[in-house]
Image (cartoon, rainbow, N blue to C red):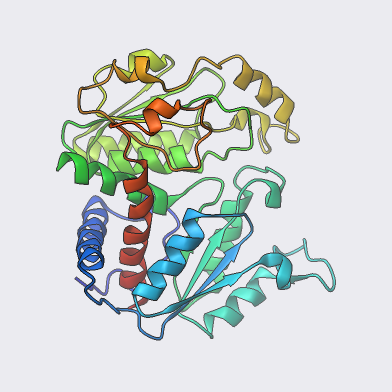
Length: 348
């Protein structure tokens, strides 16, 4: 399975990988999952070290990476930016409390075998795209080891890979699978666009029939939409956008209702974060929730997905997320398996 074309490559967005490469990662993730279930050792990264810098809190991401590295025979170092000299972009350093990213990356580059970053939202003042710039700055200076994006403000590639791994497990194929990524109401506007971006990119890459549904004012990034459309055409799938949640759900095989913020009220489009304006858009669309009535519009074998944590009672009802159509915990588990595949291929 190990192939030199993966070794040392960064994993910042699925757009950096071809359909064939994505499928190879999924195939290897399937193999690693089987070995995990059988209790079969698979220490492909023995004595390897992954440095993880978390600017944001995490449950699934941190534990899936740490557990994964342990199972692979290596070790994951958790680095809290507030407990080290906080890595900062050039020009944003503060004496005695920060250290330029170029220096941090070059130090860790010489001590371990991989570097993973999680950053979005508050740590970059909700300046859309700045966290992605930080991840890419680390990747630029870490010359000898791969950088893994554990979620920035534009992409969450590991989640996207877990999403499509879960789709394939339940349907056995991507062909003809209607995959609906829908906005859903939350009382919190602090929701990056990275999950829906990577979900539609991943589903389009492997050939699903992708539908993006959202109210007006909650459009995704134009470049991501263009890339998704291009990938859908290349893979033989399709891509469309709807402003009607119920219409989008009709005949769906996968529904993925999740809140995300409005790009229109974040820099660089806005002069400053206007979260109160975003709240107005959210509050005008409280009817965008996933309940049993909406689920009945979908295919009989529909699967409900969510990256978690979900806002129960807002984005989704308990009856749906705890019901027979929910595969959210398969999806959460698959984060570990796809990440193990990515790490093994990159860090071997």
